[in-house]
Length: 523
Figure 1 (tube, one colour):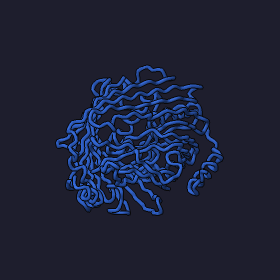
Figure 2 (tube, rainbow, N blue to C red; figure 1 turned 90 degrees about the vertical axis):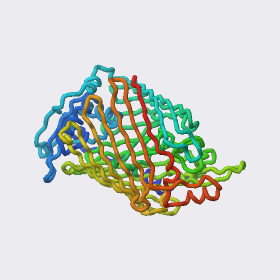
Figure 3 (spheres, rainbow, N blue to C red; figure 1 turned 120 degrees about the vertical axis):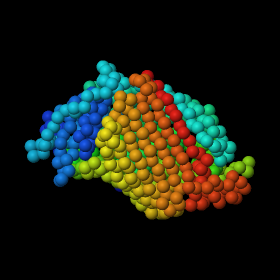
Figure 4 (spheres, rainbow, N blue to C red; figure 1 turned 180 degrees about the vertical axis):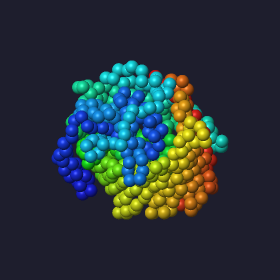
């Protein structure tokens, strides 16, 4: 018999109450969608041009004065209800974060105008005529990872792979209904566990007058910070893809969104659990012992069929945009327990506990600064803790007299469990620079370092890319792990003891510095 946990029952009650909340009246011809605000007009105009081309809609830039700050808001022209539904849907499907703005006589902008930056050659290519009733894209990737040293267990220094992903989307019923499918697969030469396939998205959706409903496999991202996405909880991490945790598995769900003048309420019923993927015995970027997912255990008696739930409210107050949510269900991060097989070999057994988590993500533009915050409190297995990551990014437009923009990023990551935290982001400082050259090839790069202020372990990261013509794109990524020491590989007692060393959490990665190149062909 399935028993509903009290915390999950509260989520269901919120869903029922939220579904019954009325939508306040809106004057049809005075609704806009907001795609963000900027402290610099040049950044706002560039973003407006990109959004307009991607969504095939007129985008404007409003000047808004908030206290002593002048902000430049990227918005659509006034939309009727049907137009609003169409643009909002395509914005969300394209990954844009938007919120609805209702104009009133007492809330007229100081000035308004169309984006004045002319489209680049790439943007003109995107704006070519297309079939707006259906979309079909195919990406074929060729990737290599090179390591300067053999792995801790003698793994290969060269790891080539190929990947493929295609996306098909079809609209029906005057764009009120749609069907989306996006499978992904990779074939890896060195690690059999990295050879895998996943249904990233497979869902149908319907857009109502002031609500959206979607059912199926989807990907949902929450968060605003750069170095650690603390509050991103809906989708499971596809860790064989990348160690940074940004690649996610598709999550089966039912998602209901209620759009109100006082914000957006999102309700999620997660109907099946996805186990985290891990590198295999021949894979790199792993712990001292490999993970054996055939030994997986769960706290819930329903195991992977436990139903999770979440409710999230997102809104804006002046220059501040924020989201608050509660999640109740199975923890996406497993506890890895040492386990001895009948053969005598030792592996790690993943155990997934239940948890309740309440979290906040927020960002605010103040002049040239973008302030960011993610914070949570989590209860699991009788213990509760809090964690947060926050900081700012300052953008320098036309850095050093060039057309490039330079962003300076500073963030701090905190976990009140201290060294006992299961994460490496317990007392760490992140510093980085983000470059965008604003050229036809959309060249960009991020250089950063995450430094543990107590243990002095660190990770250097490089991410960058540029287009090569209209059909190719080159991505570069690299990591350097330092400040730790290489753990022992035998005897097993020493290996197990080294895994408990809270002052050397990056020890197993000290030989896994890598440079990754990926060439992607778009069809």
